Amino acid sequence: MRRVVLIAALALAACDQPPVKEIEAAEQQVERARAVGAERYAPERWKEAQAALVLARQRLEDRDYRGALSAANDAAESARVAIENTGPAKAAARKAAELAVGEVRTMLDRATAARTAAVKAGVPARSLADLNARAQRASQQLAAADRELGRGNLDYAQPLLAELRTEVTPLPDLYRDARTRWEAKHPRRGRGPASRRPSR
Image (cartoon, rainbow, N blue to C red; front, side):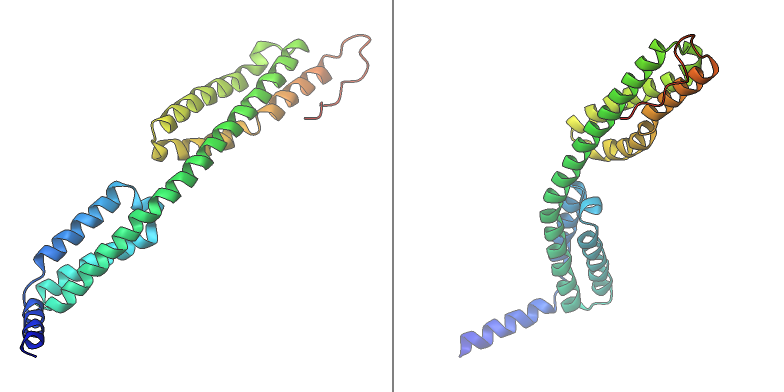
């Protein structure tokens, strides 16, 4: 009986002490979550951890030590779950980025084929200059995105790949349109009417 009373008394005394160590531990856990990218890949849990940590500090200032301890524990737990969720989310984001690299590369290959066909049809280089510059710039950016992806720098690669998709998707059709316009204005003898745009 005395032992139970003693344990209860110690627990009560602990609640009357400022939980500085617990808050510091929660701060370290939240910092670990930030370092692995939880702010981006597990945003809900990250926000919960941040809010709980703020609450723990506030309750510590208010001398509500029980409340501060509870909030610190909540912050540490939310940060732990955020770290746990970040790994799979990062893996999914990397896979999506790798697929985007393949899609962009495919569109650039199609643009190259359409450009080659336009040149063979007689379209002068000056008429394709802007498109060529656009394709070359996109190729350089794709190489940069692929390189950074290989280094694990998803924060750099993802937005660049999203921009590249928008940039390169219309390129094959733009080359075909340039060829069609040129052939319409410069029909070759014996060729007949301008050829229709080839299907993809």
